[in-house]
Length: 160
Image 1 (cartoon, helix red, strand yellow):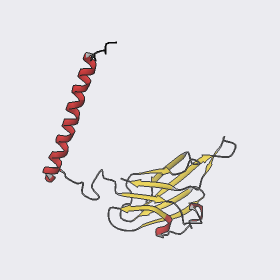
Image 2 (cartoon, one colour):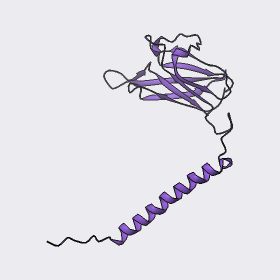
Image 3 (tube, one colour):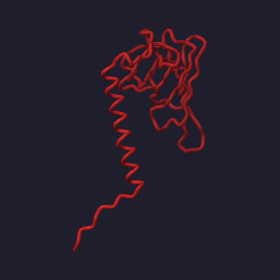
Image 4 (cartoon, rainbow, N blue to C red):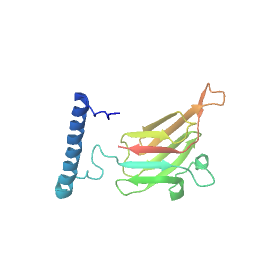
């Protein structure tokens, strides 16, 4: 038997050519960045459009998020992650079942986004409050799967 020759179609040749230049362009961009660090301009802290705060509320270990008190606490163990571009404190309190307020000192009134960190909560919202805090509401379906009810689950807030 005679071995068959490899035949490349024009589209395969063009794809290989494009891949070659794509990889070469990426390598050139990386080398430019490494050779010229002045080309990288980090975003100033607390600049417009920057992420100014990130808060992951996990609850106090062995007590859960549902046992966060109704007075503000700043216990580090209640948070999975905390970031405030001003370097100031972060606090959380429970307003009622499924509703929490997060205070990111010095960042009041900015836009925020909330997300639950559990499948039980299908809906989350974040509203900037007048006192500089952010109200987070978490909702999910009840056991029958028909009615939205409040949910006490871990959540994350991002402040812009």
